[in-house]
Image 1: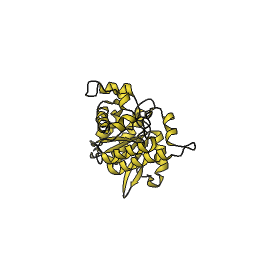
Image 2 (image 1 turned 45 degrees about the horizontal axis):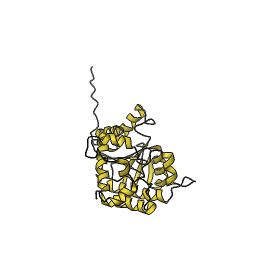
Image 3 (image 1 turned 90 degrees about the vertical axis):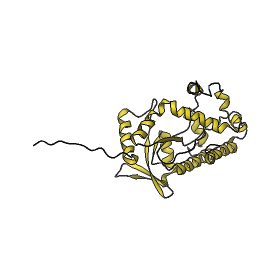
Image 4 (image 1 turned 180 degrees about the horizontal axis):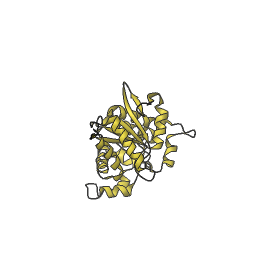
Length: 244
């Protein structure tokens, strides 16, 4: 199994909370992590069969019944499900246009990027998703906390050079549940997150694409700021010619 340590825990979480429930979608699974680089963090994966069919067109998965494949019951009965899901996910990363700004920021930093979510439950509508992970007082329930533990383990394995949290809801949850590990650097203008004995720069932002995306000016400032924190390029030199 690809990325067995993390994906086994995801499977165990679904077994714990859903058992053999045939009405539930399978969670998203993670490819092998690369250490370092930029890490972009969202809330949870969407479920868009129409979009996936467009991405899979002309590939080895073109004839796959994506809706049936995505059911939790299929994942339970098919030992190859995790790896197949991850291979399809690689195609998404190559073809999915909303990842464009992530590619751009990583290129400016001269490094690679990865994207993970706080939660691995597939649901496009967050108004329907959020009640599944928190109680009526907006406190995370056991299902939400179990997924957040997986997220924290992923963070410690990746050890990114910088983290960009590109979802307002995710920003709020991280600020609340990792408040003892976060502090704001007033000199550099971003937060630090403590992972064991290391500190990682964290940027809290709204979405990078879509209807509620950052405007161009805010995006340019975010990109500049991330480069200052994690970029590997030497600073640009300003050449000024003085005539007397």
